[in-house]
Image (cartoon, rainbow, N blue to C red):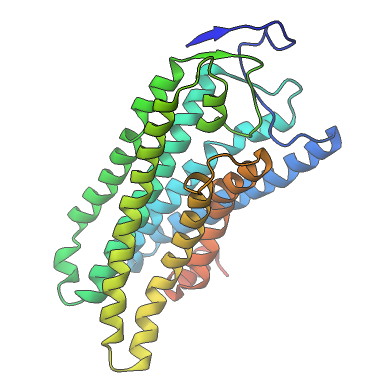
Length: 311
C-alpha cells in the first residue's frame, strides 16, 4: 500500500481515521454503554442457542446443527466490527492502522458472504424436510450437513480476497478520513489517488453475484415449499409447515432487505449517515434480533432454552 501525504493535520498518522458517530464526549460514552450492552446481549443470545443445541439431544438434527453454526457465525460477524467500534468511542484520535483496516474489511465481508451461503443451505434444508419428508433422513445425513457447513465457510472466505488485496495495494491520498464506523469499500475507494472505475465495477459484479446466487436458491426452495404446502389438504398441516419456515424467512428478509438497500440500490452514492445506519442494522441489529426470532417462533428451541437456563 502506498500513502501519499498531503499537507494537512492528518499527514502524520499511520492509518485511516474512522469517524464513527461524531458527537460530544458524553454522547460517545453513552454510545459506548449502549453498544456494549447490545454486544453482550448478542453474545448471550447466540451463545444460548449454541449451548442449547449442544446440550439437548433432541436438537441434534441437521436443522438445529445448522442453526447452531449460524449462531456461531453471528457471534463472529458482530465481533468483526463492534469491539473496534467500542474502542473508537473512547479514543481521541480514532485511528485504525492500515493492516487492521484491511483485516476488518476482509473478515467483515467474508463473514457476511458466509451468512449468505448459510441462509441458502438452511432454506435447502427446509425444502428437503417439507417436500421430501420420507426421504429427508437419508438425504440430509450428518455427513452432507457437515459438508454443507464447511463449504459455506470456505466459499465465504474465498469470495473477496482478490479484490481486497487489489484495493490494499492502491495509493491513498488526502486526509484518509473515513466517515464510517468500519472499513467499507465505498469510502476506501473514494480515498484512492486515482479513480478506479474498473475496480468499482468489479466489486459491484462480485457483490451482486454473492447476493443474488444464494437469494435465488432461497427463493427457489421456498417456491417449491409453497407449492408443496398448498397441496396439503388440512389447514393444520399447512400452518405447521409454514411455522417451520417462518423464522428463517424473517431472518432472510431482515438481512437481505437491508443489504440490498445498501449495495444494490439504484443510486450507488448514499449519504454517510444512511450508510452507517443501514450497515449498523444488518451487521449489529440482525445478530441481536435473530436469537429472539428463532427462540420465540420455535417450540423445541424455546423448551431447550428454558431447560438449559433453568427457567
